[in-house]
Image (cartoon, rainbow, N blue to C red; front, top):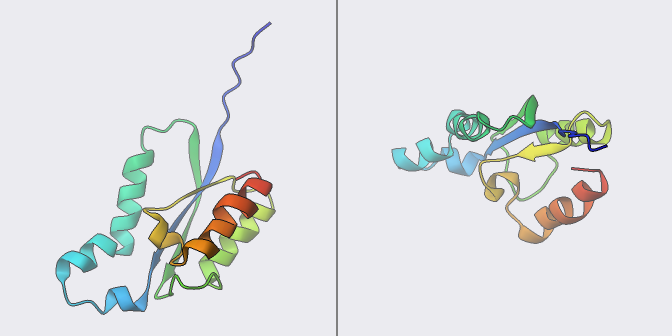
Length: 116
């Protein structure tokens, strides 16, 4: 007998804005990278995704993406390790991290090993 089992993902929305982004004088650049705009874009993307439930919104405001020792990022990792989060949603990968190789360690190795 076939049973339709729908997986519900428990998502953390992760947004980041570095101090460098905040110092840019162009209002168009500030708006496109703002914390509130990132959240709005992600929530708009998720509004019709019935299989994704947002369980947390993690914000690192004023932190560089060049390392992963950011408070909200570390809190999100703890939620992942505890099994609370199994999906991470970002506006784009530059908000996740600046260095491709370091980001890849999370995206391609650690997250799959943790079921994310």
